[in-house]
Image (cartoon, rainbow, N blue to C red; front, side, top):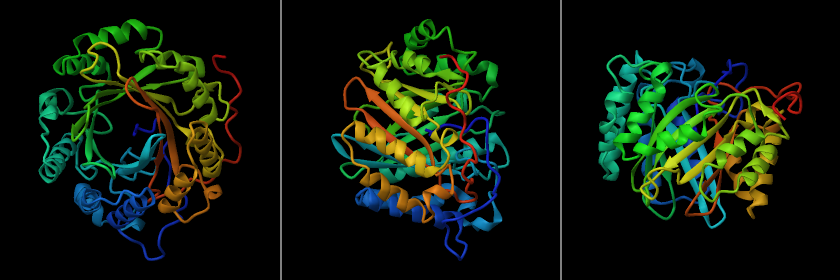
Length: 391
């Protein structure tokens, strides 16, 4: 997150730039971006190269489709229906990490078939990197039913680091049985992973915004090689103010909600109320605390609150600088993704997030659209972020 589902807006392919004159296939385009991004982030280990090799296979038939043929299906991973998203994560005490998110079943004929294809792709990753996919089997009836509903079924991501083996993340749809059942599905899933009291504790503190203004977007699992595997819940907050975002950040024990508020204001360009694309929170749970979250991440959809990607880049650089970081690795990452001028479009930088845990330093992550099929032109007039809202 989210990668997260882009709510409220998708883009038509008005214009495509930054792509080779000879139209590549989707697989070539994405593998090239991933290869360059890994080089820019100095993630050069052999297992990272495995990810480049595996990526076209994870995309299935979509990988061989020329970009000028358009998307094979309306994937909601990226605004232009690219079935992939890349990101770079920066922490003050370590080297950047690179993540690539894909929808393996993007060409499937139904949501149910998409889920089956996703499971097969997950099995290939498990075989390649020697980990167990059993946690997904534990909740398959909840998220992968025979007649699944919703805009997606299963997404998976590869988390690539220089200093260790890859981690795999799986994103599942809480609305697979319909939106009205999402809360029940999530509660049962948390129970199965040993977090029986987490949902009740969350609802006790979230009564003012969930479920009416808190759509359950993803239920996510860490698989494979993680120091502390997480169970994660992503929630979209429609029309939230900065103060409300701070209140959600306060669910993390020992957190500093005001710092989250400052981050939100910087990335949102001073927005008081996010009434366009919503803010998204991720609450993560680990064995360390069976009731309260061990981590909180706030995702700000900067693309809906900035005129162009130059503005979005400057805001991301500002939050990195506020935490002692350097903008140079960010600029290298952006150059790895596209050759176009940042001021010529908006949406290359889709989200900027701030992740905090009870056990480590905060991380800033910049989420990047492949722009395989479309580049949205700059906004003629930036959203009036100071108008209206909740104060």
